[in-house]
Amino acid sequence: MRNEPNATRVTYNNVLDILKGSPTLSIYEFRRLAQSVLSTLNDAHTTTYQHVYEYHYLPDHEEMKQNGYSLHAINGQTLEKIFEENSNLYSFEAESWGKENFKHDIVSLEGLSFLGFDAHAGIVVTYLRDNVDLSQVYYSSDFLSFEKYAEKYGELLEKRPEKFVSFELNQGQDYALLTLLSCDYNEEYKTTVGRMFSGIKQRKIKNVIVDLRNNGGGNSMVANEFIKYLDIDMLQTGYSIRRWGPMKHSTKGNPVENNKREELLYSGNVFVLTSPNTFSSAMMFACYIQDNGLGFIVGETPGNTANGYGDVTRHILDNSRLILQLSTKEFKRADSSRGDYIIPDLECSADDALNQVLQHIEEIKAI
Image 1 (cartoon, helix red, strand yellow):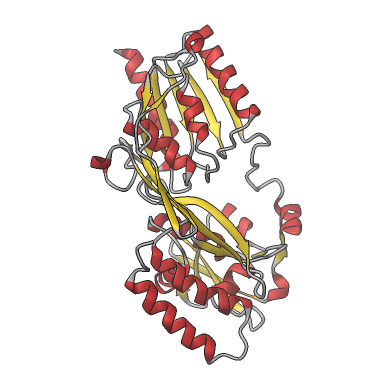
Image 2 (cartoon, rainbow, N blue to C red):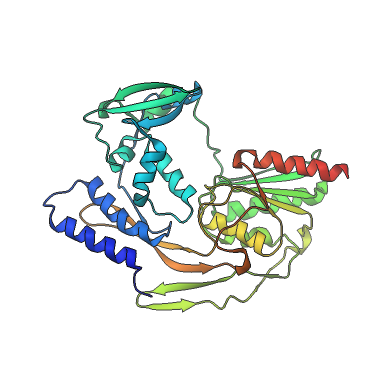
């Protein structure tokens, strides 16, 4: 709507020249070129994905992690150097989100191919522990499909809970913990949240913790549903500008009425746990809590900005079969004085966020 940024225009023209001079390209080469253009928009939601039916993983990676080794280098290049030289292949606002995507690519055959490494010729993988490195050459045939990887390391792999939403009530320590792995706005979510607040009322619990550390987003209405149980009449949600073809439509940014669940209304403390993996609608959940003064954010800054883009549309490109994802809406947060990012009220390692909150609750009880 405002014309493309200069960096996007220049990169696009350079890529077009490369394409015109290249009679053939691999899918990975083409995606690298496409990403080099899209990444200039600094929009984490506007990106491409490979149309891969099955990923293949470094065969010894889980075992090395369990033995205290960390992946250090590929073909003699440190991971930090590889990301630095290839950061333009990732669409992100917060660099931490780019690094999270890179972290997944660097351990798979398909991700390494996207980064330009040729496993057919052999890749030297170096692990490090206590300043001692251990290197091994892997060929494409060495990589394991996810099914075989899971068979080999089934007991070691972290099990993802079957339910996307669950809660725990701990009356002794005076907290309720809502774990939300994706922002699915459905009957299961609404029923689960209702049951939690019913239990909170019965047990007179004074602290609610919402764990969004591994939530990649979905539908922002999950935040609105949760806030219905909080004692607030009007909710500030900011405003947005949606693209409709050649036109745009703007919301006014007026407060919206909070249709409170009067029978289960909660007035205690709210803590929201965040990490770089807290993304999109999960980030917006934290934003609504922070901008309306409803609770405290604890952990690390989420993976995208509160003043940014989203509500994506997806297309499959005809020839390359790449999945192209594009933002259709621009968002502006309600409290513009807080800047682009959701900065936690208590900044700490995401892994330690829950412990920090529980320690804080104990300190409150002791007063």
